[in-house]
Length: 333
Image (cartoon, rainbow, N blue to C red; front, side, top):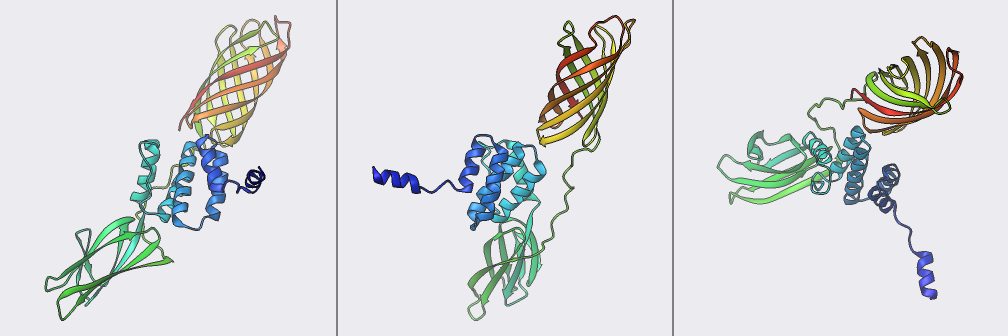
């Protein structure tokens, strides 16, 4: 019994990486990212860094932070140019994000031959005369050298992001055969030309939207209706105009302050001016607070609660009203 208690007391707590894995499996992506960032700072070997950054990329993708997902996948490929995701277990669009990152990432290969002057081939294509420095996509490639007399040597090399791989192909002169093949990988960082890609598309600063909104005044009947509206979202402000065709015709300008909490969740505070344009003319000022859930960047569902007071309220008794509302919005991505 004493031994069991000692084991329980002194058992090592889960590592940051294990905490990140657990939170990721439970769908708690913000918690997972915090633990994985800590794990990345603690990791010392390339194999662990590869796993950490692959999981970070998947977590960012799940939050629809695709630019950050690409940055994480780039770090995974830097740790291991052959890093992969299982398309049978991972969303194909996330796998495609990793593969597109791999396709536009490159390193360099410096080839020397002894004697010098041999023709160099990279994956079977003529790459010039040694000594020569080549740019190649990350991953495995075949480097070959051929001398004037026809002797040939070749070597498989692993090209890494932001690194320069040195290859030496040597021919023993008196026997006319390849004596040895030497590969040297220098860990120093070098700037490698990379094919220019268009920058990631950032969120639009101005995004038009259309919305449908149902509202009910709890202490007035209840009275309510369905609003149809359109407007524009700015970075932290939204403005729009809604129309309620039934039961009483209303025109309702609305303006809101937006507070993004996560990529998929935004809090808002909203002011409105209700104009009842019928024979029973009315004019009211309202305030609401609510939350919008964004399963997609272009689509959201929202709920709000608040109240309004009528300045002019012809034909009605209740001037102060408590309002609940909910609806859907679609905006340009």
